[in-house]
Image (tube, rainbow, N blue to C red; front, side, top):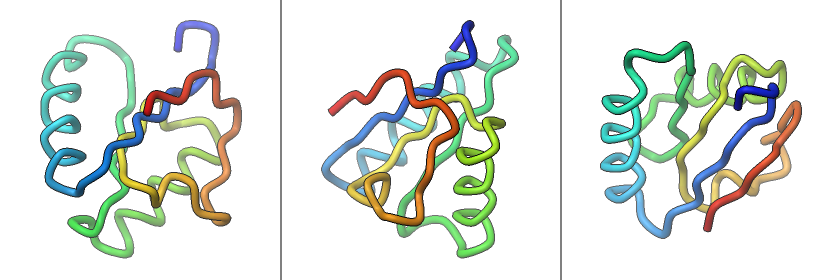
Amino acid sequence: IGDGKQVALLVPTTILAQQHYETIKERFQDYPINIGLLSRFRTRKEANETIKGLKNGTVDIVIGTHRLLSKDVVYKDLGLLII
């Protein structure tokens, strides 16, 4: 992240995605890191904002289900994919 790379955390369920999102957001609250979530719990507008942020590099860490692997999800510079 410090070198401008992005991190994607792929999880099996939407509940787990939400839990990880909340935990990671809390742990990194004191750092200049933007965290996104892609799951069915997000509105279309929120999902589109996250996808746009991944493409232009403003989202540093994204947590989500298999949605992270969709064709419309483009990363500016993905450096780490955690499964």
